[in-house]
Length: 327
Image (cartoon, rainbow, N blue to C red; front, side, top):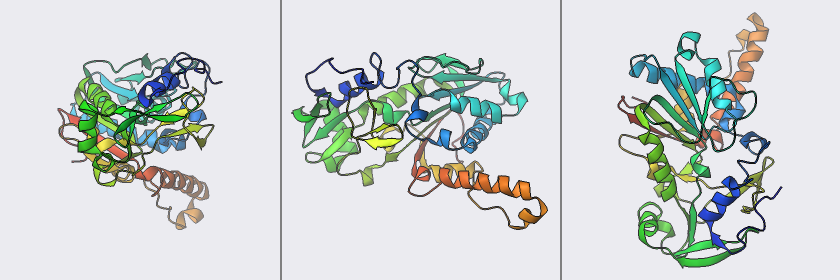
């Protein structure tokens, strides 16, 4: 279904077109009865339950830092269909899980059959204490595209034309954070993502905020940008008509606030006990079933930490009133 065709036929900036295509009436992410992100691309959440287990261990670290409060908040921003929250709740010891207040922040409607403990909300709640986690959320915060010093305009069929000259805060952002694209070159202007992340972190009274995404840093920005589309598990041409996901890598270093740190997913998951090391061969003789389970787990861990794949994702970790993680 291509729900937005026929609306707003004039070319507009990519940020406006993407907002309409993803989140407008019957948009790609809010369409009733749709499969959610899992139906179109594979994230770490969908790759293995080891990921939810690692987030559960991180939540327990935050819990200890906060002195084991009576209510421990877990806020999943861009929650999809609630898969990560369900996995974390299942991975926690019962005595911890019963203190957790899980929030799924999502613009789509609440899916049927979701754990009733999970609160379904459109924006992060204010004054939370715990862990705010955003897995592949920022890449779907719509941004404008600049090329050769001008905004790029796009029609609903994906045809691009040059727009007005980039100026003001957007130009300042490019000059600071993507200098190899100013004044010549192509880039996604990440300022809306910086603002979205700052607003999410501001809701956290105390704890840890983590954003995980496919990203790049100032010293290695791609010369032609990264805007693309996904549909049905395949990368496709980005067309802002509601028929596909429209996404771009995140300038995650620009998003970081005071005390934040960047590390690869490979590093982060290693610190949280996820390893792709094969089990000892001797286990195959002493416990064949255990060996098969350990081998399968190692395979899943290897996918989550693979170079050139999910392991190269970046984690932006920002403490709020707690010690830095990793210390």
